Image 1 (cartoon, one colour):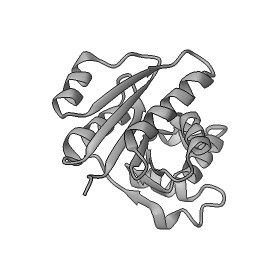
Image 2 (cartoon, rainbow, N blue to C red):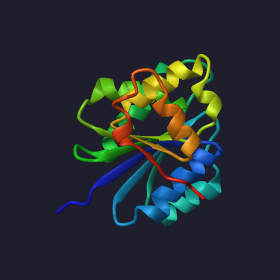
Image 3 (tube, rainbow, N blue to C red):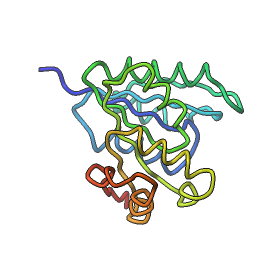
Length: 172
């Protein structure tokens, strides 16, 4: 039986969310074929690439240009589907990855998606609230890294159906 394949989408630069994602890929989910799409303006650090490589995690860096970069969104989405395969799981780390997630929805409605909510809480206020709403409703499952984020997500409009599949996983 083929092991489940897991593909992660994370910011390519240094961030807390990226650190959580790398920890998941290298330590917490061993024994699964895993791939990581590093996406963003900053190139990934050599140390991060070395750690992923040492754990046999397939990596692909998709550079993004400032502003709206439709080409890179689609390219990242295609790489995620390639890494996860038909029966795989796609783990999205952070609301800022929403454009790639929307491209994924256009390419494949069958993919299983887990969306990590890493914060900050300001993502749930003002205009960012719309982005978080779309992100939360585009994921099959949501994982918040703090109880405050989980509670704030469940206060989003039309969120009554989100509670059953919104979990808390503290990263402490």
